[in-house]
Image 1 (tube, rainbow, N blue to C red):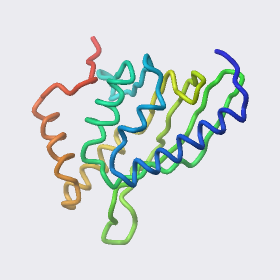
Image 2: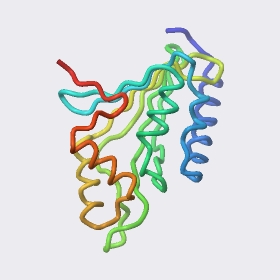
Image 3: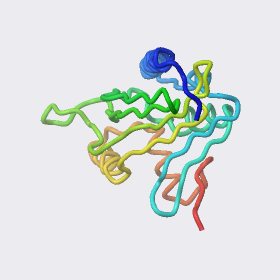
Length: 176
């Protein structure tokens, strides 16, 4: 892994954070695709038998920042901690998933557990790789709570119904 100046990685995270907040406000994450190299890879695990994999900027734009974010308009992903390793050109960031609205007791709808991303920096203010990690069980519990409260966005409800019906989703890869 190549070394990069720490100030460059700090600036990358500042730009990334600003773009993330702008995407949240707009409800459109697709412009963030510019932060990835043409051949970048973005992955996360969905349990013991399934992963999500997007290869290349176009798949990241269409699948990660498009299809996978449908129904999450109004959600925020505040970053709580960022760890930078300039010698390896890597960043680990811990974030939360917060849905719009609040419970009857006034607390926010928020996924419990750990959420975060590991990034491999490529230079030129772009990521070569991103791997998300989050507590899938707690995320699903939050979605169930939102369904029961009638607070789930219709687009997300449709996505869940499609998945429950076994419809293949782009980027979802079953393990043998």
